[in-house]
Length: 482
Image 1 (cartoon, rainbow, N blue to C red):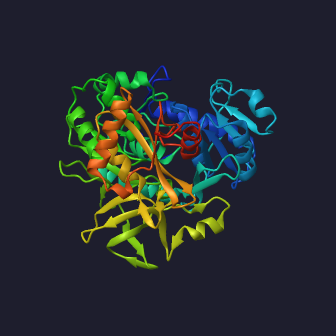
Image 2 (image 1 turned 180 degrees about the vertical axis):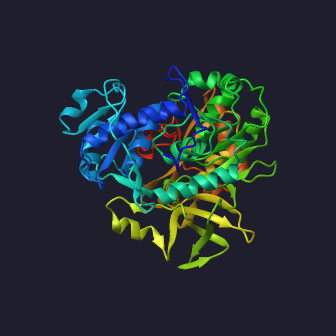
Image 3 (image 1 turned 90 degrees about the vertical axis):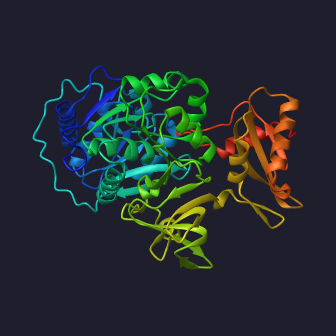
């Protein structure tokens, strides 16, 4: 698509044999457009697009957009029951996937386009339709797909605006060779990592599903592909730093987001990469991807994300919008979502006088710089004392024995809630457990320390690297606290 893809852009993928240039991408895009035109779809139709780490995924996305349709991007690991609910919610009649298993979709009564088998397709007249920039372009499902799918809707305008902000704040030089180790069905990977690169006329390198093998040779990947920029999540770095040697390349620009990032981990990444071009990013699906980020400095505090990249921050306190202070973070940006798909009530509740309510607590300084302190829904209320789980986790992960921790609240008859910590450590023993407890006791307020400790072999996460709270609680319920 002319507005979203530069003719200079290229895509290389672990899954593809050759590098896809503009010519190859456009050819396959026209094939897919030809198929869609034959379906005689209405402009209001939503096309389900199954994410993958191949160039054909982007040809499919641009084909959908050039015909003026809205794409609903979903994970390849979406279950049949989840997909059934998404189809019902969106009313979709067509799904695009790579190497389709026809039996999987047959009972769902949806028309399938297999992008692995396009050779026999004849290109028809596929003139692009006129697109209204305020039409729906993309639906990203964030949660709730098992029962009521919750989809974030973005327009062509909100995506285009965010890509321009990203290009401006990152710079084309840094984007020259972009690595995407993240899934392409959510904002951080799709928009911030991939579309930003393709819009800027650079080369995008796609990794298959990130694995331990990738982590082991991450330095080699960076050096061989001459990577200049990549996006990531904290959990990736906890593994990379443990098993990978340092790369030879310098001044690599690294964005880390989607979860709390400690200043301690940020320093480790900076040391490993031999670069100070490390950014703690803040963003949510509703803002298209990032809304801002702050570069690494030796004195960075936990949660510092700097000033916004296009738009404004504010604080909601005592039902007032404030330009500084402590409270719930509000965002006003041109890249904000249209709303939640077919959920007008949920959409209205998410805004306050035109400002989007993030659900995050933070501190906004007079100079406009923001520090994230935690999620409102994660706050633990223990006998009226507010405990932020993120504070405990960021402290614990400074300890050399701690691989990862996740703190959460559980109901309690006496105090209302108690703080519980699921923790994974190396060289697990009673002695080391006591050392970690002592470390917490020496460095944190006694009344805000965990009431229950659960020592686990792993902390459950989804494919985006985010912790799955209900699975953590289920796992801990099978253990005795210590």
